[in-house]
Length: 184
Image (cartoon, rainbow, N blue to C red; front, top):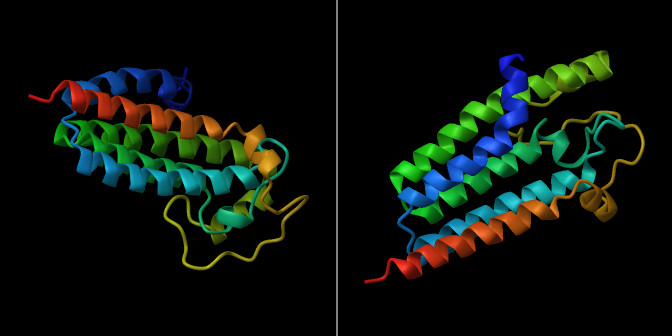
């Protein structure tokens, strides 16, 4: 198994172990949970918008947030991760979260990029030249889109993006519980 395949396959499973370590070191307080929750919610909104445009394995998505960055789902995840790091209120937890994200998702993005290049060839190369891998451009790239290029709630549900929102609320709830348990 290649390193890219390992990181792609195991990123979620290893994330559970990471979560245990993050909770172990976390020292949440209400103010930071609220601030982290607000930032994380912004990440969820970015992810939700991206999921409503994404037609996995059906077509190359180049509209909506995909006209700004090739990886808006992961950009939203990065914002969400930053929110959780703030909510945990621990430098160790923040370093674990941000280090995990940087390591795993940089490899996963490159692996997915190779897969898209294999599937869509020159169309993906044109897209990659016009749209940055991660950090968004300021204006949308004007690229020809195939198929349905509008946001769709049905597509959001098909991509099961609501699971990210449930997970985020669960983690924030656990941080509140951890804060309450650690009260003097």
